[in-house]
Length: 114
Image 1: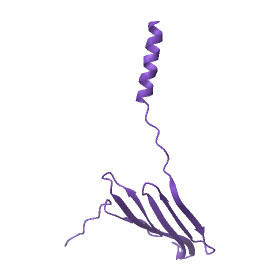
Image 2: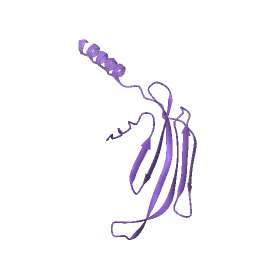
Image 3: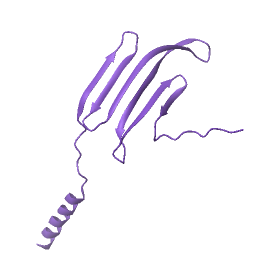
Image 4: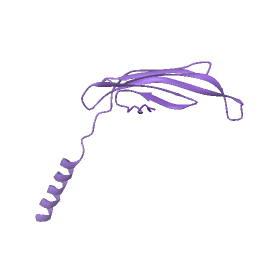
């Protein structure tokens, strides 16, 4: 009898300690358009204020051997709700030089003084 009570209490403790299952974010709009030239437009928005918009364009660049290559230049932004409950927007682009992002929460490099 004692072991049954112990097992029952252990199961209750495990059930209480289990993390709550969150509902998945509800997407209220989403769109993706692939362009004939290799570019695209993409966007979505959720019910809780998260959104993203992005577009890609094909660009020809020269590689290290001076041979032309196509790259996709990506530009966009995303918005989310920060820990203070405020919307925060990050703008970004990515090209042959790398990924570049700007926003209030992204630290800025100090300016070198001479």
